[in-house]
Length: 419
Image (cartoon, rainbow, N blue to C red; front, side, top):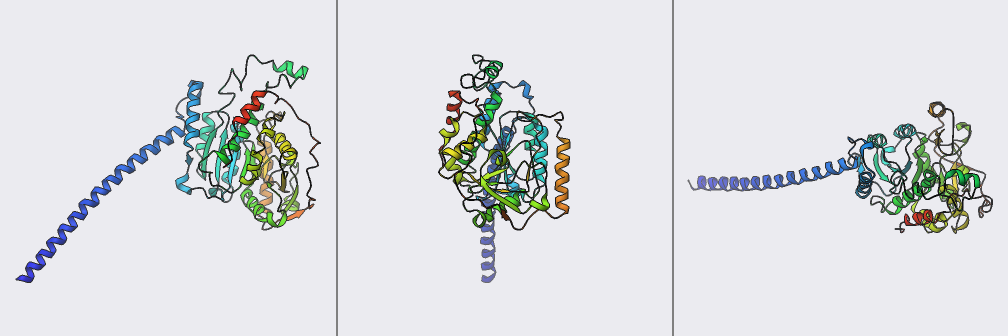
């Protein structure tokens, strides 16, 4: 009888403990669900804001409304698809793309990026100087890797009747071109001067402004909306980085794009050359790291005060006259970045559809793939360079249109302290 009572009490106590445990578990689980709902609600709210309320027609938005949205987006720094692909590794490649409003080219670039091997490990940062719903929708539709958008705030679109836009008190474009007094009447092609401002701002944001890049030590690859990449561009870029110690320890820029008119992968696909930075060869598809950017950023005055509206020629000036060690490039001979922009400020064509050129590029890449000329396993250097100060130092001239002191100051204001 006593044994039965003991067993009864044991069962009763175990049941009571189990009941108490179940009550505590349900209580904690309900709190978790409540917290999850709050987090999900906040996340959906952030995502809705980051997608710029695309149901609204851009034409109905005031300039002030767009400004508020841009400020909010730049502050949030939302990374799309991060849940699917995980956080950014400190040595991952960041692909930094400067975007204006040529959506037809951007579509082709995004398609080419989607075909690249290991693109899921990269972060694409689209830096815009024009707010456009069609472009926003296109970028936000990307599902193959992590994506971020940032917006240059001091645009012509945001300042249509004042500097840095069209200041009515400035002299006319026609008089400045005919009389050629560009030092006195210089800021007349604002979309052009905007490109230099935008380039400097986006580089500062990525290296010194974004939270996600705070500890990043990998490569940042510079592209533009009218570029097209080969499927092995990341493979080649990382192979160049890995080989730099043996092939060119002093090279501080890696270039995977060039402007060759003919593409011979059979001859060039494993070859790299080393030489001082030169705008006409190395301003497309080049990558740098934080160490070099820190040195460039210390030359902000040299970049911002140089009377040339081109960011690349201004960088050439920095390399030649400010950096202790000039920009030294290791460049792949067989380009992995193609320029498909037939039409733009610097380029004109009767055919602005880019279909013919893109077809040509795709055929070249198809032939290279079938001939097993992509994805090299090693690189071989050609024309070994005798390291010396860039012989182009005194051999180039300024294109002007950057003498306005307001441009100088705005550029310097966009400079962030090095981390």
